Length: 480
Image (cartoon, rainbow, N blue to C red; front, side, top):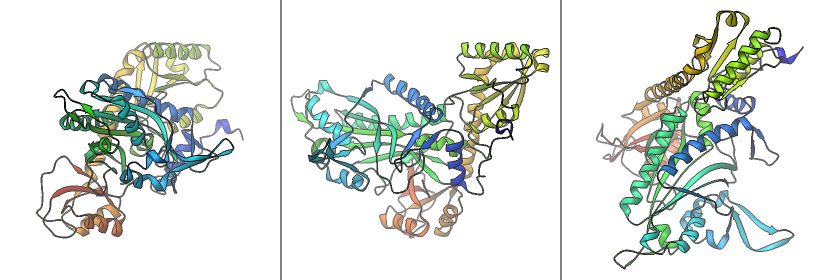
């Protein structure tokens, strides 16, 4: 049998095995391939193009607010890493260590960066001397290595790509504004680019980043009801700066310690897009990050010159209008092509057939909801931007409705356990603030506090876990 003329191999259904469904999409949509080194992946062109779209959007936005890109070494001397003990303890189990250079043992171990706080602090202490040097607003695009025991493509890998912002400020108020400002930018990225309604808030003391005063997070809710931490923004206070001796002479001629922030998001966002929007037929890509926004499929184009010419002309018009468009005029059957581009999540499919050309129209099919639309051929390019915008808004509204319907206010511990163990999403509870209650939930149902949302309006007086007086509203859920 000619495999180019049959429907693409199906993927596992979400309800049968969500984890296998996810892996099937990663592989069959050609987002990645497994590398020879265990725990590492190859970002295939289609998957990397999605990351490039995210990177381009975010990079442009931070440059509008005066941030600059830098690049620091990938190796950290052991003596430098050990200068901040609390921070190191959080990463030590995941570190990869280089002990040989060339053919000779190294005099000092070098750690492949799991994150870059110590590198930035060592750099900052040499470039900041006066209040005139502040603020420093740097960002780095790079990869980090964390030797994970259990890996999953994009979600948790031994190496992943990300951005990490590191800033220094003269006052606490400036640093706190930076911390929350970057969190809001991540929220905007979800709303305007990824069609993901992030739930944001502050992490509890036990869940915050090692060495931070406050950690803020964006959480996304997957279709299996589990949460995914998708980005974080940290207010470091002055702790790191004091450890590393970063000082500046202020305008009042007094030596002072600057205030510091750090914030980052990674290729984990690709995993969020897959699990928030995907369905049993494959990827469903938000149009503004889709490598191909529209795919043109000529019907009998190899036998009808008018169809072939119309398809080529339409591609040229769409490309001129700034649409990322492709034309598949291969010998594969239309059915195979429909299935293939459905799997790859292309937002719009455009069919051009003999009857369409004769009538001067084409048929558009939206990936996000299967809706079909017949448009005059000469209007497609002009209408495409609004069509893509509507697709984005439709996807965002659908994801928001899911998040809202899968956030349950719980008044008892039994309710909390029932919500998180049955995949119903966030359990919104009143909490006393004790670490012991968080540990109990984790031990009993493998769920963690995802965040304390900014809306802290109380709905009960006591902690639903222990019955003691409540101090905060918290969202609990199982998480990736």
